[in-house]
Length: 167
Image 1: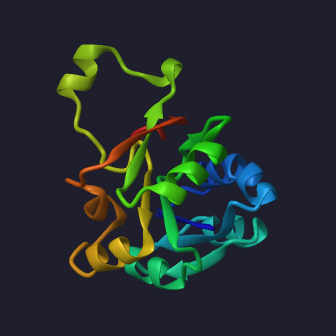
Image 2: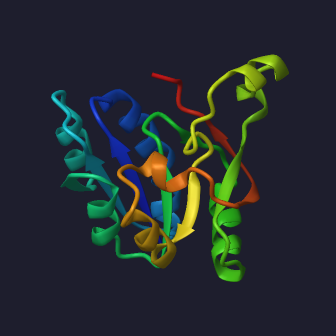
């Protein structure tokens, strides 16, 4: 079972798009719970999370990881959307691997080569599938989900993600 953790601040629209792409995983029984870690939103993020049936946590990523019920976590940025086929790939990965994993960018969502070279990379742009035990250990020194995901050796999943637009 998988817990989805989304750290957000003032991104109610992006959060709604991300939550919509998780519905299939909830129906299939892969997604056990969704935790929204709010770091000080002043918009309607709280209502979006509650109406979607998410656990709403005020605080950083460590608080969200502590609330997660699954043995594996899926960390996403608000606004990211998972493409069809992600459920099977994540279920297979969590059944056989211990390494964290990231999604592949959707072909239509990939930036041109030079734009990728000269842009700053966001560690959570491609999401992160990580064991709860490893995430909890990393969260002790990480102040955000982005910091937790930065610099990890990961495996590439054969499933696509539409990356959230940069803020």
